[in-house]
Structure formats: structure tokens, C-alpha cells
Image (cartoon, rainbow, N blue to C red; front, side, top):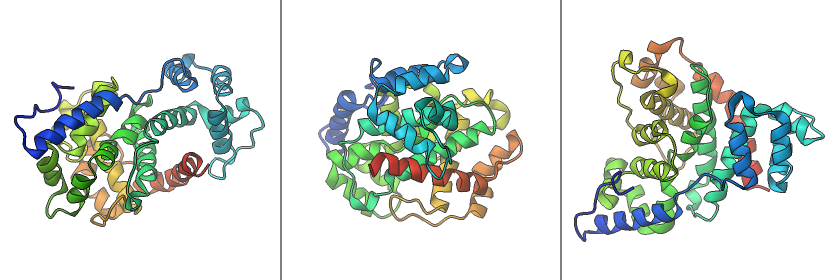
Length: 306
């Protein structure tokens, strides 16, 4: 962590804030579920690739009443349309990909349950859940996803929780500052929120690809496409997907705060979308948003509305 974030050089307010942030990330920055917990066991089973089975996952889920309730509720929701009477049937209706997403979401949301956000940010988790689903959907257009794409979407803005909870005055000042918000973040903390979110991913021992993608998602570096390499291993490629997914959330008006309006036509004509076109037929952003939003809303209600 100390090597990843800049070292405070003095006693200026930004230096003091950064020192406090580093201490908080060291203490509370681990987001993965405990290895022996039902979520930890499910996480491990679902990351065994083809070796995981419906029976194994159903057995683990049944250990945890909350996890059982979430899986049943999503499987039988209007968005999924299942008719599950048992955990085994619920897992079959959802498929292991969606079960993995519930497990990831439950672990992350449980970790951040005590963090506070202002009322104006009521859509924070709906936005992140939606972006996570869109990132995963976009990535699946090009390669088989492994859950890290979804996790990157959930965590790409997670540092705002630390800032809003532990630095309410600076948080408010950033939101009302004139000019670039990223510049305002640096003035108050010496780093921006993407850098802090990447540090949180580092603290959680996530893959370097996720850390780098989260770090660069506000302004992806659109290098020569011939230098990208294997798409499923590329942090640059994932950072572009994160950036586009956030723009899609804006187009769907799922905002934390007032942002510059954007349309799907503008997204399709953006430099990032044009860069993505080098790797094959462009994804249908409107169709992806339309298909993922109802499920994101269902998952959000499942976690936050009992």
C-alpha cells in the first residue's frame, strides 16, 4: 500500500488526509469474504471453473439463511422468471454465472454495510450493481468472464464510501468545487477516487489487471490496439469497458450526483467505443442496458429492501 500511494511529504491538510486514508485502507480495506464463511466457500467453489457443480453450490448456499433467501428471491423474481422450489432448482434457474454475481455482491455489500452515504447518493449501489453487470456483459462479448470483471465494476468507485464516511467536509467540498472534480479530489487528498479504489483492490489482493483497470477507468489510455494482447488479460481493455459502462449508467440516468447528460448515440460515437470497434463487431449498448437494468434493480432491492 505504501508503495502504491504517494508518500505524504508534510503536514498540509491533503497530506494529513492521505495518511488517515492509508491507515483506513490498511485496517478496513479487505473486501473478500472470510475463507471459511459460506460466502467464502461459495466464492472458492464458483472460481473453480468447470469443476464447480450445481450440487456443491446448492449445499454451500443452504448453510447461510440470508444467502438462501437472496438466491430464492432472485431466481423467482419477475426479471428471471424462475419457479424454484429448492435451492438446487434456484441455482439451475439462475445459472452459476448469476450465482457467482450474487456471491460477489453479497460479500462486497456486507463489507460496506456500515459505511454512510448522503441521501443524494441513494443510487450509489444501484449504479455500481448495474455497472458491474454491464461490464461483465460487455466483456462476455469478447471472452469468457471469470468474475473479476463484475468485481471491478462493483469496486471501481468504492473509495467514495471511505471519503463520505470519514471525510464528510472534504467530500462535500469536492462535490461543490468548480472545475474538474478529479482535480478537486487531488487538492484534498493528493490522489483521486480512482487511485484510492485501486488501492482498495490492491489491499484485497485482487488481480493486477483489476487494480490497473480501476485506476485508469476515468480516463483510459487508448493505446494502439495491436499492442493490447490477449483481451481477457488486458487491464487497458477492462478499463475501457469500465469507462463505457459508467457512461451507459449515465445514459440510463442512474446517477449519484448531477452529471453532464449523455446519450447512447454519444457513447457509440465516443473515442472509447471507436477504439473498441478494432476488436470486432460493436456491442449493442442499448440492448445490453435494457436487459441488465431490471436485474440490477431486482438485486438492489434484494439487498437493500429486505
